[in-house]
Length: 210
Image (cartoon, rainbow, N blue to C red; front, side, top):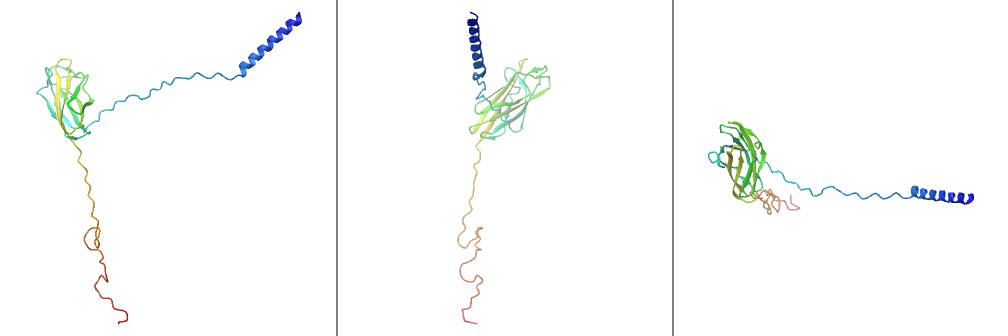
């Protein structure tokens, strides 16, 4: 009976050693695949192009959505797909402070945008001003019209009408120099070397004559 128990214990120990060896020497498990969370095709918005720094003047607040004196500004002419615009000032000529709300720009053709906004959220005290730079890009030749409005918390509204003109770029012209003919130089003056005997007109003596 003791021999049977000893043999069973030896078999159990051998089995444990085999299982342990297989666990230690076997291939490592493959790592789980990871999910790629990199975002591709991120949407980007092109920043508006700034025009030349033209001074477009001042805009005063009005009531009822209008502007003081019906402000209208003429924007310098520009070529197609080139920015036109400049900087204008919103001036508070009221007797009370005015807090400017977000500006809005609209146009009947092309693209009208606010390039630099130094007014939204600003409280203008009487006689104070702030600056706004606008830019228009036309895709068709002709006259365009736009409007920039800036309401205030207190009620009055800054509003200005913009007008401008877009023209097509001038066509480039190239001139070709004519090909010089026989006996002419490249400048066409006709002073080339003439064909024939001596160019000086001196006769050449015949052979055997002195």
